[in-house]
Length: 247
Image (tube, rainbow, N blue to C red; front, side, top):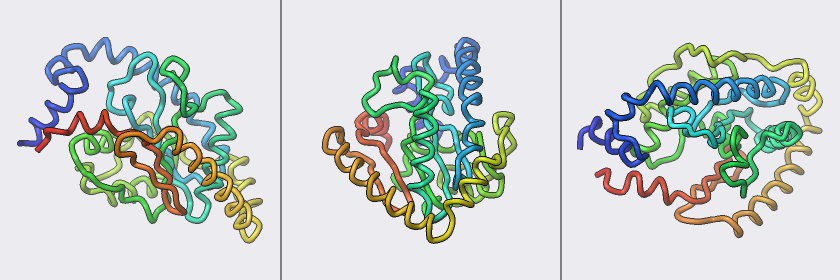
């Protein structure tokens, strides 16, 4: 099957044929822009958090298929050896803001909240297979919203399978460097003291993750939790249906 046919079928399964996708683009763009404006209001808070090298917008918002009750999916790139510390600060900050999606949130409750389902360090920049049309369409349209361009370029180079060869400037990428708060916490949590905090946060988070998985794991889950990557897609049935007859 040719690539363009795969893509057309992909959007048909999303409930919108490719030609219809373009015909009603204007109405979708209104919602799209409102959602992005709301998302970018939150993006600046990543500057306050330590050990985060970049943040990429993903999911329906990046695809341009967002609904009014859609949340904001992100991929968070962190420094090596501090992935659990970075995740802790993300959860703490956006819980305090009331803008983190809880694992059992229904769509209405999850609207305009950030879903932290993927963290990676440089060792895990090359994302895991399968490299089917769903993941290609999803990941080649990732939108940088925070971080240094060289790190984002490194991430895209590591994922040549997604057919996105380089980082390109995007008006939605407005924040590049950590603020004083992010720099301060990195200094405090560096060295041996930071290593001990990372180990403690790892133990606590792994224990909670394992407990959560017993309650929520579904069809062919994509679940990874180690020192280089944290990925939480507990049920991939919808994805399986979208690509089941790709071949």
